[in-house]
Amino acid sequence: MKTLLKVLSITMVLCLLFGLAACSGKKTEETTAKAAQADADKAAADKVAALIDAIYVQERTDKTDEQCAEAKAAWDALTDAQKELVEGENADPDYFGRDTGDASKDDPRNQDNIGEKELLVVSFGTSFNDSRVQDIKGIEDALQAKFSDWSVRRAFTAQIIINHIQARDGEKIDNMDQALERAVKNGVKTLVVQPTHLMHGAEYDELAAALKNYEGKIDKIVIAEPLLGEVGKDASVINADKEAVAKAITAAALEDANYKDIAAAEKAGTAFVFMGHGTSHTAKISYSQMQTQMEKLGYKNVFIGTVEGEPEDTACEAVIEKVAKAGYKNVILRPLMVVAGDHANNDMAGDEEDSWMSMFNAAEKFSSVEAQIAGLGGIPAVQDIYVAHAQNAIDSIA
Image (cartoon, rainbow, N blue to C red; front, side, top):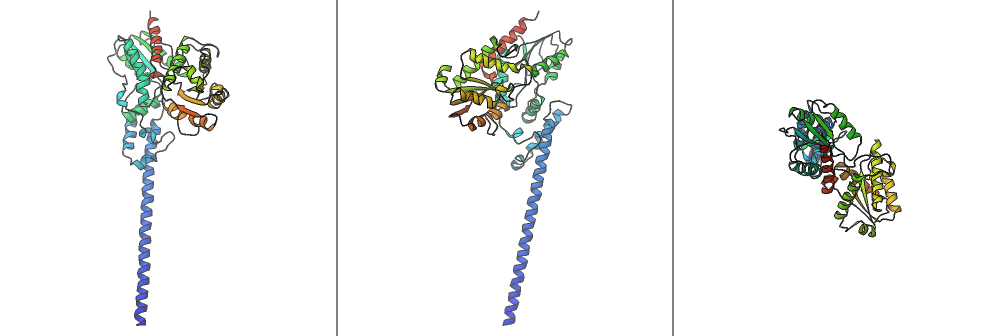
């Protein structure tokens, strides 16, 4: 009997040991499989990140169309979990994954059959579809409505943005060279270029330089004024364009905030902060001139700032101090940019700690901080200014 019990005990122990070994082996296999899957997921995500970084460039090549298609196909092949892992020098899940609106509502205006008279609208561009439709297309539509006997076409100067839109949405927008080559091919004789740029800055200079290469290929080329007109020598210099822009953007901000007028907003302790891009170009004085213009109009509760902090007194920290010192407790942020794109959605109204929204809140000096995400191009009065500038350019043609 004792012998039988001993045998049974040994058998049970052996079964237990073998069972544990089998279980351990199974867990090891599962761990190995999970690690292998994780490696495969990261490899797939890294491949897409590399493809995105390859088209996140400011130069178009013969391979650009193919690269855009390849990047989108690779993204579509990822699982949802893999898409969250996409991270590169410039790549992230938002490149393809962020919903910025319906691109089909846009018109790339890259059609041929231009005729002899073309009005080329040149913009930096934005990959935010809703803003592109409302702000850039809004300006283009206003110009086409006014100048029905001219063919309005589009060019973007940011190839990075062109590639983004093409890869994600399949919409092809001409860069400057493509648009100008299209004009030559179509036999355009008179070309009026209307920049949607804010000022005579670096982008305007680059535009003018690009057009020089086409002198002799097109009979007449005229560049219209940017939104704010001539720059002027110092911060005190203002003009009719700056006055018109100041009135238009302030009126739009007041309407969106449900204030009857600027006095009502001031009485309620509300300040408006218009955030521009900023620049190291000498044209940066334009931002200071816009502040002067607001003051000349009696808009004591309107402040001008810039993402880049150039001029220095337009940096976020400086603007916070100005608004707080003036005693305003409610702040409304709004872009001083033609489009409400990445800067408006992220640098101004984003959740990151260095966004203007976050920094104004972190200052703990204000009762409320809100953001109005709307570009200048969607304001009818601003569109009218571009129309007037184009008219002046057309009138200047002998």
